[in-house]
Structures are given as structure tokens and as C-alpha cells.
Image (cartoon, rainbow, N blue to C red; front, side, top):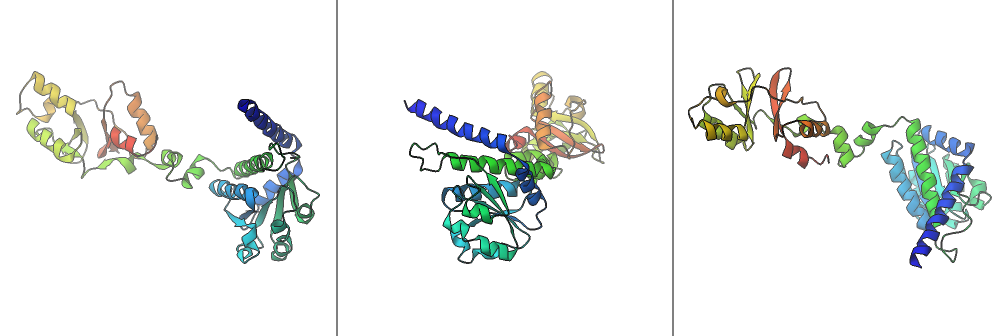
Length: 319
């Protein structure tokens, strides 16, 4: 029985969203143009459950290229109206259009010179008649069996607001790179912004040896650097070879010559990577190599500039 109740609510709300989609007209396009052309900020405003939707919309707009703030309708009449300027677009949320705290704001907002857009189910309400533009949700009944708890109405407000934000984002040609700039701590931001040069170990942190460095000295250099490999370079940092822990173990197991020089047991054909490559792309390079390795030299213009370690990529938060 509980499952049936759940299905009823979901279908009821899905039908409401389908109705909104079918009824979208030029007013939606007008709202998009108002936000795209806004000289100030988009202020979202509501109270109660509608206020929660307004607050979420402010976050969505801000993260997709439209600077936005949330204004609590009850606080607005006690001084917070001061955050609104004549260049702002104010999105107001009221299912009934008769919310007292919302209706009272219109004279002041008109005096300030802000443009008002109301999202409501009642375009002929008091707030609907005062707003510059009305976007209708068409919700007549809540999913609540008593038709009291805001359910379908807030779902409709949220979906319509998301549609508005995405349409504005597309009009602005707001892409992944733009989104990443506003989400530098998130996984997407790191995947789109973090580069090999941000994660790699620099020259001072890596193990480097010359062609004639003896085996024990190579081991000591790797151990002191706390890495798993050494780059064999010349005086100008040109990459000549690469020595991993595995190379050392295999050579010792077969030859057992501790006085051997690096040139004798290094790998000459070395996979390298560039410092400006995205860290996420570097991880894919590691994954696609025919032979699995844990470190790779970072080379720029033929010279070694660092060492990228697979474990550091995994720790960087790109996955």
C-alpha cells in the first residue's frame, strides 16, 4: 500500500511538470531575456517552502553565470530591501500569489526600479497583477491528500526555476570551464582545472641521476626523494633514461653487480607527459599504457621539469 501511495505522488508531480512544459510560451523567453540582460543581480525572494525553492534557485543561478542573492520576504520589509537596486531582476515565489509578505514588497520594489517576475499558480492573484512578468506553474492540487502541504507546487517551482537557469546558461554559452571556475573544490572543477604541473613533484623533490651513477647511489637517490623511480638526465636536464624500483630489483636479481652504472640498467624508451596536460587526462594516460607504471617523467621542450606519480593523481580528487 505504501508503494502505491508513493507511485501516486510521483505520477501526480510528473503530470504537473508535463503540463508546465506544454504550456511554456513567450513569457518564459521574456524571463530569460530579462535575466541575460540584467545589469545588476538576480534576487530570488520567498517565504516558507517557496522560500526554500527561491534560495536554491539563487545558488543555481550563481553557479551557472548569473550572480544571484536570496532575500527572505519577511526580512525584506525590515531593512533587507536595501540589497535591491534598480538594475536587479527579482524572482518572487508564491503558489497562491496572495502571500502577504510577498504582496507587500511590490510598491517598494517598483519605487526602487527593479524588475519583478512572479512564479505562481495564480496569475490573476494580487501578486500576479502587480508583477512585471508572471510565470505560471498551473498547479491546482497538491500531492498531499489534504491538498495542504506544499508538494506538487514546490516541485513545479523548482523545475521551472531549473529550466529558467539552464536556458539562461545556454544563452550565455556558459560551458564546463566556466562552471569549473565557480566549483574549484568540487570533483568537476578539479577535473577541468587541475593540471599535471599542479600535482607533479618538481626538480627539487624528484630523484635524478647521471649515466655513470652507480646502482647503490641510484637506490639512495630514490629513497631520499621518497619516490619510486629516478630520471637519468644530462647537465641540461635532457631525459636520457628512467629507472624504476622494478628495474633495480630485476637487475640485482639477475646480474648482482652493485657497481653497475645507471646506463646499464635504465629504461631508454620512456613514456613521458607534458606539464600543461589536465590531471584527469594524465590519469587516463597511465590507465592506457600497455605496461602499468606508477611514475612518469614530466617533460617540456625536451627537458625534465618534474615527476608525476599515479598515487598523487589519485589523491588530487579528480575521480
